[in-house]
Image (cartoon, rainbow, N blue to C red):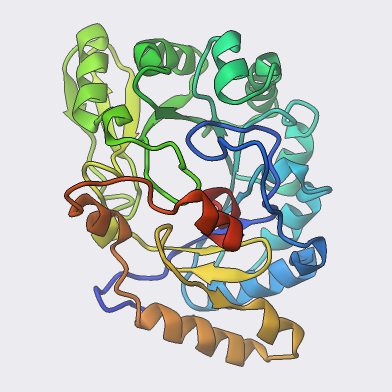
Length: 343
């Protein structure tokens, strides 16, 4: 294994792989528009191509793989991909981020395939709110998916909630209680001004301080939990007086760019070094043109070693922040969408 560092001495340790750009929700912070330009199906990487790239990334030090989308469970036979990735030398963990709409019928298969962890996106406990904000009436399927994952033996479940002022900021405590009651750790994510967030406003961001204060008001004083076991983890974790443990990902108001060890590969094989990056590196073309594993490794290592990206910090320094990419820009280049990059 060859360990590679970028110009800020950040290692390449984690890889998020988008397996599809399609999604069966239209959440207001990610896909609020009615129509989208999809990646051509012929451009999507096959399972074999994904596995090959994963092997190359693992040679460079990647130990943690997370499968994302879009909604990754829209990709047929995802359990087969997991079973192919799990034995790759150097890969310690395979995780999945899902909205859980399709999870109930697949949780057992995913567990048998070797999936280690599941993170479920759940922004509200109120079905009527989900119907408006995410344009789906299948809230019950999300809860059923969570319970099916627990029944299947997943013990390291997490629930991610993007907190948006005026939408679900009054559910911060309720979401924590829901998660804690099922032995799940809740994670709160600040509303980010990434590509695809075409209706983002700074006034809609609920900060880490506000989130922790709301939890402290109900669960008692918070004590920060050390990140020594995983210094590159994006969440700051807190233990509250009554035993509740929750995490906050403060990408907007307190970026963690200098600890970021993640690369992203889109469903069509474009590598991005940052969620905010303007340009990516095409891995599909050399992959399909017959490049050797050594050549692919050199391409990836060269890109990472030149990395200086601090996208969230750069955005924080913008005095009058607005939408990152206007709608016409997303139409011209769908790869700038967060749901394509596997946010």
